[in-house]
Amino acid sequence: MKKKTKRDYIYAVGRRRSASARVRLYKGDKESLVNGILIGKYFPGESSYKIWSLPFELTGSLGKYFVTVKVVGGGKRGQLKAVVHGVARALSSVNPEKFRVPLKRAGLLTRDPRIRERRKVGTGGRARRKKQSPKR
Image (cartoon, rainbow, N blue to C red; front, top):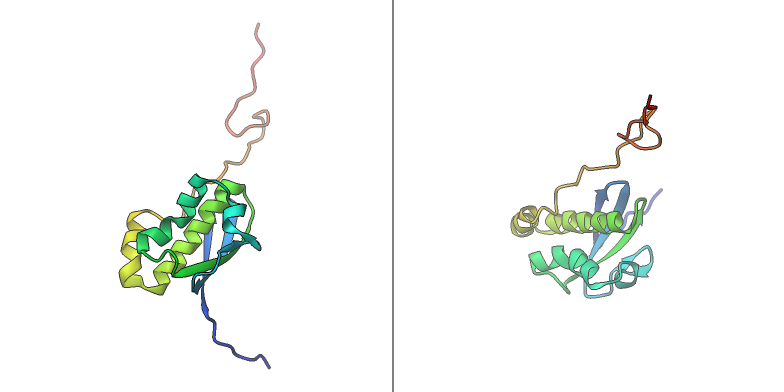
């Protein structure tokens, strides 16, 4: 028989292209982790910091919450956008009437559906390229 425990986090999933991020949002001011690594080390640089801190800044909750994330698939940029999507979804479920509107306006709650187009037969290794026809 399983023992029931109260969860002290909010769970959400964020996706972008082929990347999928499972996010746990906790109250507190600890360091956020991605795959067991500090988020600033996993996504280095000022531009990455601006992107992943955007949901917290929009809701005015920077320093009030921290996240632990498991992210798989895709490249670094897709993983970063998946983390942001998951964090935004978790924050909107914390306080829907207060947090949902600014996150929705910024477009952070909408999943970006664009994925890589599959390659077709007879296209010479690319999705839409046609093979060169021989000249006469």
